[in-house]
Amino acid sequence: MNRKNHPRFQKPIRQISKIINNSSKILLTAYHRYDGDAVGCELAMFWALKKINKNPLIFNLNMKKELSPFKFLNGFRYIETDLNKLKKQDIIISFDSGEFPGIDKIKSKTLASIIINIDHHKTSSFFGDINWVEPTRSATGELVYELIKYMKIPMDKNIAIPLFVSISTDTGRFTFPNTTKKSFTIAAELMTYNLDLEKIYTSLYCNKQKEELELLRETISKVNILENGKIGYAALSKDIFQKVGFFPQDFQEYIDIIKSLKGIEVALLLREEDDKTRVSIRTNGKVDATKIAEKFGGGGHKRAAGCTLTDNLDKSIQKLIEVAKNFVK
Ligand SMILES: [Mn+2]
Image (tube, rainbow, N blue to C red):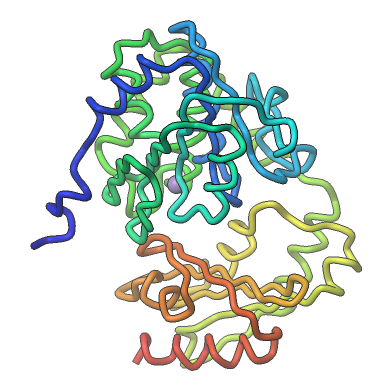
């Protein structure tokens, strides 16, 4: 059976909307990587649920709120990050998270009866009690948009802005190949709420501290090219972050620089964190990034994936390159 037609991938939108309608305290959450899609979904759902008189709470375990580029979004300040402060909840909805180690801890702490998982990672571990996973969607924000429409919750600017952020960041401002007619159609409808694009894009992309530029410079200086220009990688050790005094929440633009080199098929960004090495993988051409990530227990999308190795930086470089080479032959 085609994976896409597998029953696990069928849309439980009716069931989800029923459960939401029958609940009051609704915990909205995401795992680990609080990017534009994840945070956008949480905030869009937050405002949508408020509109139908629910009690939503956004909870992002250990999120470094002060470093987030999404601080400008309305409602961001209500995000809770301390597990100890969580009180009883009826249900949990997770967004944009292919896996969620530790969600059971949140479930038992909040005594929530059900976990709903809404996501678009094709490597999803289906950790929810109900899973709505559509890997063909450009962003989880597209699913949240659909859910809000299905539930007939009137759209407004508070909902439209985070949804726009979700779709525009996950499509690389509508340039990645995951961008579809649907992404544009939804974005076009969101634009009817008079979104100030200049303000949104300035908040997202023209808000750098000078340490970030320092780190970009360090990253560029560390770029290595192999296999006739088909593989590019940069490895960032702990002391680099210490030297520049900055650690990004999101490494997207650092790896995009490597990916932007003409002829690159596999771009890798490795960074040392405590006793492990985190790796971002981006691909052009025929290489599927998830195929490389999965060799190391990771996952993601065709063009963007990630994994974590328990080896040190040098050993991780070796292992990654060895695998990557097989994909560019
Ligand atoms: Mn996403």
